[in-house]
Image (tube, rainbow, N blue to C red; front, side, top):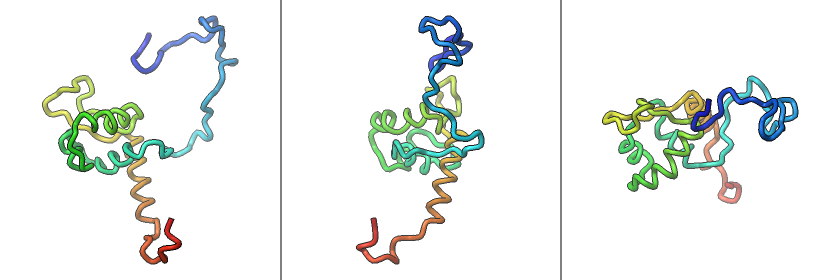
Length: 136
């Protein structure tokens, strides 16, 4: 069965590339089974959107205001779609993207990022007490 994003029930033995499950390269081996969800810092737009969304449900218009943007097209391409594709945000009505009451909310992965970033921002010492030369 083929899905838009993954291949379900794929056969490794005797596939068209001649790879078996044992000989297939493991490009992204897990470091630990209990490793917490971390954000690699690859896209600051995703972090900005996750922090704006928080633990609330918001429409696109509300998110535009929260991240202080005006262009819906740019917001959708640069913020919303990457966050959805990376699994940080989900739709309230997943099968109906044009639902009149469509809202967006954080997934478990997005909530972990939000809580981790909020904790780090609270636990980090503020800059103001340092002389200007020591601020990086």
